[in-house]
Image 1: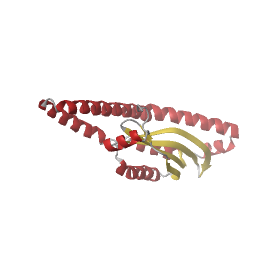
Image 2 (image 1 turned 120 degrees about the vertical axis):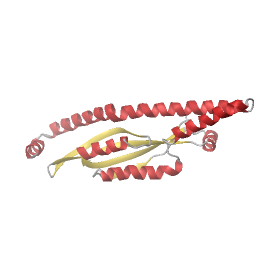
Image 3 (image 1 turned 90 degrees about the vertical axis):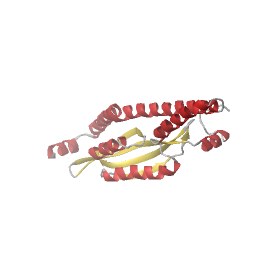
Image 4 (image 1 turned 120 degrees about the horizontal axis):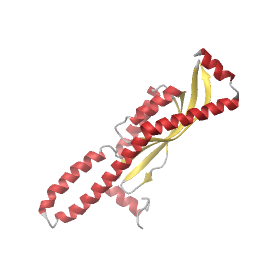
Length: 206
């Protein structure tokens, strides 16, 4: 470890920067390949399932008025929809979820420099809840934190990862990591109607 520390301390600033860029690219590639990529695919699949089930439920609910035998199908769809939605927190659970993410950072040994929620972005059936996060710690602590976030039951994506300001502190490479942590919440029918009226849902016909 001493040899590594001495090597890093003796590097020219340009080479330190090149090493950081290489480490960032390697980290980003590994994170995307093993955590972010598969999680984004699962997120997209879950969104599609929820949207399809909502559309099918609405259609069959209308048909129920004309055919009583559709009631069982609608009830089954409601059960499947409820199971899918459990992976998306509702508005009341968002503060608790964000607190859990912040706690994961501290438990990983990171110093949390910035944890700031940005305005929500509304889609047809759900809202994206982005948070700007800046932490400082060792490369291992940062990687451990992102790994634990990827294991949460709720859908949480980490993107726009930037590693910077590397320094050797007590024989460990310490750096800052900036990222965007995004979770999602399901919109109730009442909230959807209100957002449509306010023209805040993207892609909605006006």
